Image (cartoon, rainbow, N blue to C red; front, side):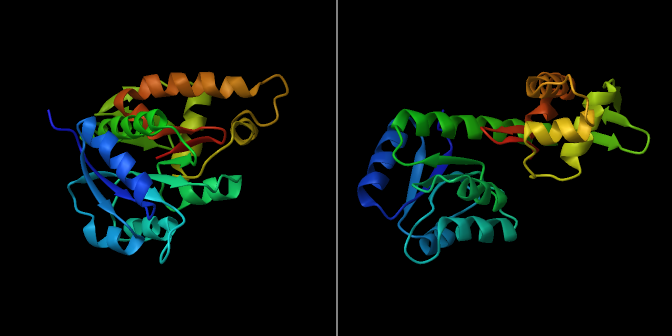
Length: 219
């Protein structure tokens, strides 16, 4: 079965060709662009993911992502960049990035990240065919019309995440907001409760995303 169409955007010819060769060998249909401007011209609804360099002549990868999101394009974006500070990572997520790979990287890492983001995106699309409704006032959650039983803590975590979509909540902030100063609660407790919450939400659990080393958000 033919795999998804990928758009690779990078001004480094050697890296672009290596990525294209390996992804095509793995069954993907690959298009390339050498600049942000060309990427905006080339991208189509058939592209299911964009590998996007950040630092390019002309408009940057961050600006490309910003323009795509402003136009309503939700295509998954994985940034490729040598910029690895926390500020840069958070900016990449803030403008609509789905993942962030710092250079130098291995081809195995790129392929694994691409497949993971595509799997997550496909699961989200499948979930959107259903119906999740959260009644914050009455503290009730319905999935396809069926009431889901959540603990007080699980509901409070869900409420926190969905009221500010795409905001990345570090574990410490979730502890402060949900457990409100309880001294015996450890950051690992957050992971346990989110794992249970994902399970109870079934296919909608995929919307709770773990941004590695940063925290959780509702995507």
